[in-house]
Length: 157
Length: 203
Image (tube, rainbow over all chains, first blue to last red; front, top):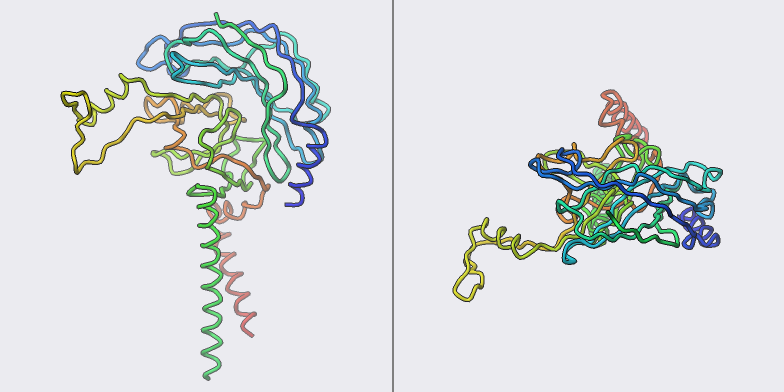
């Protein structure tokens, strides 16, 4: 209990909830897939989007203290579905940071990890907001989640 | 003689007290966290390096929706072991009128002249509500959990499948339960030790 509280207080001293980040130069590829592994049901065409290249820079060192085992960072996109009947968050890329020395991210033209599809067969909106989220995994105690300051709006093809 | 019986009875009631208070603690935690199993032990290495086998996780199940990046524990009907994985995608979905109509037709509900639903008196009916569809993935697995889901199932459901999302973590403290369930000798050694200790404490 004491460990959890002191660890939390120390992260607050680091101002961990307001870490800035910039995501830029996002290029996406849209394809039609017909297999279950890409979300298709009954061999219907399923629109898939993946990121062919993006740049990312963020300094996540404020998230590290003596109780941090690892940081899980993920690039997510928020978007609205057809007629506002659905709202979604999908992950395009993620990474695990084991050590404070790796906490400064400066990535250039990196490929996304996942090919993503919507609940419907097509992405009905062509507008999304990209954000960088993180999860602090402690050695012992409470897990914490948050998002970095800064978001990028993108137009899907 | 009389005191001996009393002594034994007192010992028995102490044991019962210990068992019942442990049960009460578990059930209270269950009500507070709104989860059938508020504490779980990690059984697989699919979330390494975040969680190893034998780690204890504390769950919370009172948030209406889970978020991307959350680590959730879900239980599928055709599997007996709950799975601890991270949310890769989430979709909050409101059903369309057509879908609701289709769903009601499937239950055998019909409409009257004013297009209101005729609901039979003694029949329980289900309602198609807004839901959250989730796709999960283990950090240590190369791809998402689609192969784990049922036939033609593309997502798991927030309300039907989730036991809770992980909030607290203690490493390795639950390894005893893995030893008990997977090592045939450990169980007997443990029982033997408990018997021995009770023999000595009697004197």
